[in-house]
Image (cartoon, rainbow, N blue to C red; front, side, top):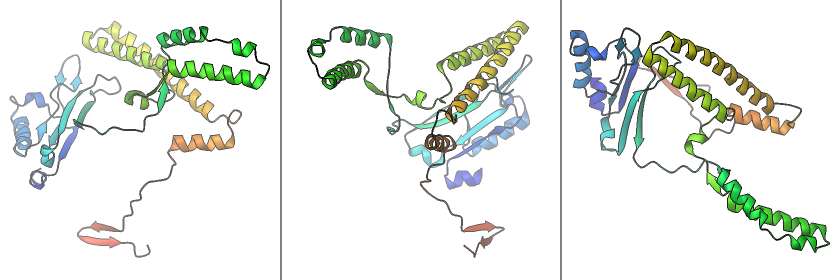
Length: 271
């Protein structure tokens, strides 16, 4: 730690240390442990209990941050615990982010279809003058007139907007229904942990089993359709495989020519 502090390089120490941070003022060894970190400017960022049982609540999962040269940057720090039923310990998070992040342009444009816009679309279609179609004998001109009017109404009522950053990270098979199920499962988990009742625990575990089942079925169904040879061409199948497996061209290569082992340089002379 002293070496990192002198080098002024930002550093994070994190792990399950099995040392209860909450006993800082009660346990001599814990006090010495924390003081040694503080003396080297490694500050704790997790303060709330990370393992909660019916009999105890301890802070045994730690994250320490030494900002080093980052102190002069426009950064903000955010940390805490998440309510989660995947592990016995609550997951911890530690975020460093710029107050003025760069604008990303990789999110696609989509059209939203709320009820208000649907009503507006129906209203606009109802007032279209279709007389030119009835008075025209050219089928192509009639179709062009019809298509242009419908497109004009559609584009005006359902404008293109950028997909939100939150939605852009969603898995394609994770439907809105699954999101509602996930939120309900988390609510049941919190109620069980906060109340400690056996009835709440049983209700949560039954729903969690049901949620896992439909989650697996949804994922399997999505990939089954994605690689269905009856509905997709060979070209489309390869395109889907490339997207799923991230087989696109690599933008950069990292070649290791030399490795230092026990103060000795080792290199591959054949390359």
